[in-house]
Image 1 (cartoon, helix red, strand yellow):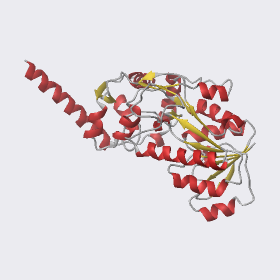
Image 2 (cartoon, rainbow, N blue to C red; image 1 turned 60 degrees about the horizontal axis):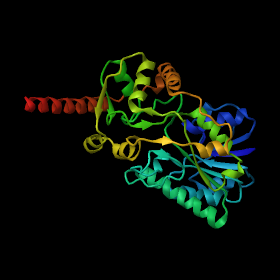
Image 3 (cartoon, one colour; image 1 turned 30 degrees about the vertical axis):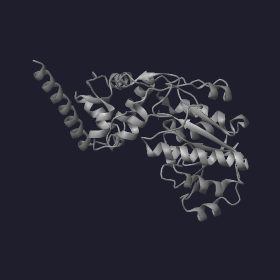
Image 4 (tube, rainbow, N blue to C red; image 1 turned 90 degrees about the vertical axis):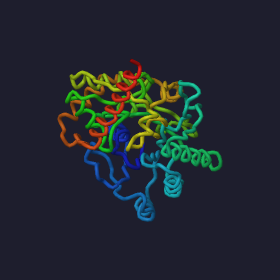
Amino acid sequence: MKILFIGGTGTISAAISRLLIAQGHELYLLNRGNRNNLLPQGVIPLLTDINDEAKTAALIEALEWDCVADFIAFVPEHLQRDYRLFKDKTRQFIFISSASAYQKPLSDYRVTEATPLANPYWEYSRNKIACEDYLMQLYREEGFPITIVRPSYTYDERLIPLAVHGRNGYWQVVKRMREGKPVIIHGDGTSLWTMTHNSDFAKGFAGLIGNIHALGEAVQITSDETLTWNQIYSCIAQALNVPLKAVHVSSEFLAAASDYDFTGGLLGDKAVSVVFDNTKLKRLVPGFTAVKRFDEGIKDSIDYILAHPEYQKEDPEFDRWCDRIIEIREKAIREMKEKAI
C-alpha cells in the first residue's frame, strides 16, 4: 500500500515506520526531516512544515495515498488543516488520540472503546476528545474515512516510562536509583497500569491500515499485561541491578504542592487504575498479541540508554525537588509520631 505519515519518527510512529518498510509498503513521511536518519532506507521524505499549509498543498498536489496518519495533531485546528489537505487524497485517515481521554475518574476500571470520554484534569486529553468529536462528525456527515487510535503509555529503547519525573524526562530518576537515593512513587504504588512496547503497538496499528472494518471506529492498542506502579519501578531497579528505595506520596499532594504539572499526568491519567480490554482490536486484527513483557522490554531500554550518553539528561532542579518533597513527608511522619507519644 501507499501510506503517508505526518511525523513518523516518534516513539510510536518510528516503530510502525520500520515495520511497514519491512512489509514492503511504500511509506512517505511528511515532516521537517530532523530525525529521519533514525529510520531505515526506503522511506520517501516530503520535507516541509505542515503548518505552512500552502507550501504543503503544493508539495502533495500530484500525490494520493491509501492511508494518511497524523501523529502530531493535538487540537481540532490541526485536523481541520489535515481535512483541507487530504480529504480527496486518501482512502483512510488515521488520527492518534490518547487513552488519557477516557473518563476520569473511571466508573469501571476495565476500559473499552465504549468507556465515556471525559477528563476534567488534563487539557491535553480534552483537546484529544475535541479532535475525536470533529472527526466523527466528518465521518457521519461527509463519509470522511477516519479511524481513531488510542494509545496508552508506549515506550521503546529510548524511553524509560515513569509517572513522576522532571522537565528533562526520566534520567534523573534513574540516576537517583543508581546512587542509592529514594525515588517518589505516586499514591501507594498499587494502582494498576499497562505498559506497551512500541514494537507490539506497531503490529496492531499496521493491521488497521487499509482495514475496511476500522473505518468510522475508535480502537485502543495496548498490551494485555497489567502491572502496579510498584512493580513498574521494581522492574526498572532490577534492570539497573540496584535496590528500589521507594517513597510513596499521594497524587493529590504532588499535584497541589508541586512546581511541576502533575494534575493532568497523575490525577487525569496515571493515578487511575486501568485494565484495557483489547477485544475490539483483536477482532479487527486477528492474531494480534502483545508479546514484549515489561521486565524484558525495560531491560532493553536500560541497556540502550546506559550505552548512549545523549539520552542521559540530568535535572538537578528535579533532584532537589525530590529531596525536598521526601523531607517534607518524613518530617510530617516524625511530628505525627512525636504527638502520639
